[in-house]
Each structure stands twice: as C-alpha cells, then as structure tokens.
Length: 437
Ligand code: HEM
Image (cartoon, rainbow, N blue to C red; front, side):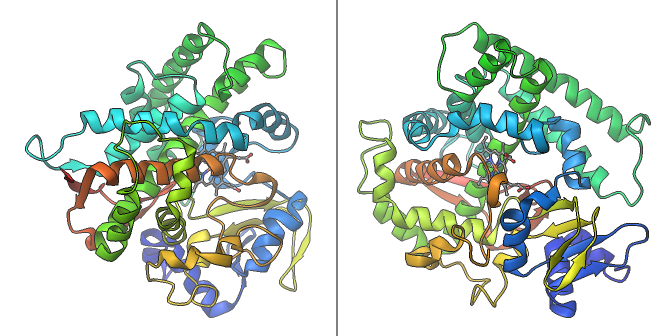
C-alpha cells in the first residue's frame, strides 16, 4: 500500500483494480485497527447492495464526511430516518411524474442555449461549468418547484467549496476534529452558512407559492404534518442539490468529450436528433426518448466508462460471508463501479467506447438478481432515487443541444480524470460551441 500511495491518490480505481488482479475478488487491506475490504466480484457486489443489504449500513468515512455538507439527507442517512424520508420523497420520483418533467428539462435547455456564448461571441467556454449551471436549473425546475431566483451561483459556489474541503478531509491519513480552526474547516463553515441561507430562502419562496407535485412541496407538506423536522427538510434539499446536479453534469460533460473523440458516434447522434423538431418548438416531451435509442446508449456507455459515483462504501453491521471469507461486523466495504465496469472479464474491450453494447440484453445487467457488472446508480433499496430522472434528462439535454449546436471540446482525448466526490474532468473541459445549420 505504501509503495502505491501515488497511484492510490492519482487514480484510486486503478489501484483497486490492481489489488483485485493481484489478490483476488476479496481483498482485506492491512490497516491497523480497522477492517477495510475491497469486493470486486459482481456476485458479492449484488449481495452487499441487494441480497443481504440489511447487514450493511452507511456509517463510513465516505458518507460521514459527505454528511458534513448534506446533513442526514437520504444519501447519507440510515435505518428509520432513511426509511421515513424515502417514503416522503418517493412520490416525487414516480415514473409517470418523471416523464412529465421532460418538457421542463427541455425548456431549461432552450433557455440555457439562449445565453451561452456561441461562435463569434466569447468563443471558448468551460463546458463542465456550463453543464453544472444547466443541471442546477433543471433540479430547480423539476424538484424544487421553480427557478432559484438569483441564488444559483451562490448555491453552486458554496456546494463546490464545501465538497472540496470534504474530499480533502476524507483523504487525510489522520482525522482532524471539526472543531479545530484549520483553513479548510473555516472555509467549510463559511460555505455552509452561505448554503444554509440560500436553502432557507428557496424553502421560504416555495412555501409562499402554489401547491404542486415537486419534491420540495412534498417535503414542506411533511413538515406541516409533523412527519419531518425543519433540519430534515434542509438536509434533503441540500442532498437533492448535491446529488442531483453534479452527477448529471459530469455525465453530460463526459458524453460531450466521448462524442468529440468518436466522430462516428457523434454522426449517429446527429442523425437521430435531426429527425426531431427544432428545440423550442412543439413536441419536446418524454415521447422523443423513443426516437433516441442510440443517444440513450451513449449515456449508458458513458456511465459505464465514467460512473460519477466511482466508489460506493458500506459498513457491515453484522458478520457476513462473502466470496468464501467471513467479513466481521464493523468492516468498511469498498465497491467500485468504475473498476468493475472496466473489468475485461465482464466487459470485453472494456476501455473502448462502444454504445452498441447497450443494445439488447446488456441493458438488463443492472436489474434482476444476477452478478452486478453494471451499477452506476447502485442497486437494491438504496438505488439512486433520481435514476429515472437522470436517464430521461441526460438524453434530452444531449438531443436538444446536439440538434442546434456543434460541441467542440479542445483536445478531448487529453482530458484527465479527477476522482473527487464524483468523477469529473480535471480542470473542466474547454470547448467551443458553433451553430449547426
Ligand atoms: C447520472 C446521474 C446520477 C448518478 C450516476 C447517481 C448515482 C447514485 C448512486 C450510485 C447512488 C447510491 C449510493 C449508494 O448506494 O451508496 C445514488 C443515490 C442517490 N441519488 Fe443519485 N445519481 C445520479 C443522479 C441523481 C439525481 C438526478 C438525483 C436527484 C435528486 C439523485 C439523488 C440521489 C439520492 C437522494 C440518493 C440516495 C438514495 C437513497 O439512499 O435512498 N441522484 N445516486
């Protein structure tokens, strides 16, 4: 481990894959006073996330540090609190309701295209930052019941600054108590107070509006009915913002990078989207997704190669037997979608971008009870609540943007990966947009 510390920091999943290759599907790291296990067999992954999920909880360094920002929202909470809040929020993500959000997603895209710099104007932009801006607008329009009225920049800035501190904290060899006034902790506290003020504002504005089916309205109703506290509502709103925009933005940015690096794939996307109406005209609802099988496969393949949630952790609550080994209670379990989804045994020519893999049965790798070789959204009861939304949103955005604009990232093949809270392109993605005529 000491010899590999450089690799561990630079490309943690490559380090994990190397451990699995050398020592097998169950690896216990030689750490003093703590049990840390890496599981890389897709059957074991399925067992931890689904088959025997009751034996595992989320009190790991990954989720405890994230909770410094999100509080005990759905992503980081456990047990009764998680069950109660998941029940409150689930109706907001019902399949039909998500389908009805497609128009709002499209409108946000059209508004975004109306204000981004396109050729002749400011030319180059950071596409990653532009995607973050767009996906935050979409979270606001679909889940929070309306636009963020001037608070978007503040929210994104505060979330990013806070997450930055959290990642640095999670990577420290020795934990530093939050009460210590380190520069990082001071920055975290400042970002959290900006975030909290902005979130309070968003909640108050929504409360003054009309009742709706959006998740924020469900949360406010739960508060009024005594089913949730004010702090719990705040934590869920922050969780929706954190979990709901950066992940989709990363998926979109990586997709643009992949399409630019594979012109034949880009041409197929263009052929599909050119059959659609002009962005902003009638007909841009969930029905268009049926006309976009290849574009959807691009998103699936992008999530295989660049899963934003590149690592998922659990803590064992009781002993379990995995891969023939007895895992003790209290162990940290590491699962890596990135490492499993690039394993040659389950994904031949795994480093190649080939959306056609997702035509036919392969799309079923995620569902059912077989080996879990594809899990960008997790699996089992803790499956991402926003999965359907993300899988509607990403193809809708790609379709609307690719219909109107050509996206030209600078040196798409030279982009490096940054393994933070989510997997993002290091330093953003410089790109030029031009109109397609
Ligand atoms: C491409 C986009 C996305 C990816 C790759 C992704 C990935 C994931 C993964 C892997 C988990 C499970 C973590 C675990 O088991 O420990 C998760 C959970 C979650 N995601 Fe997503 N997500 C995405 C989009 C969204 C969106 C749009 C939302 C909108 C609100 C969202 C909200 C959540 C929440 C609240 C949870 C916790 C669910 C629970 O435990 O009940 N995600 N996500």
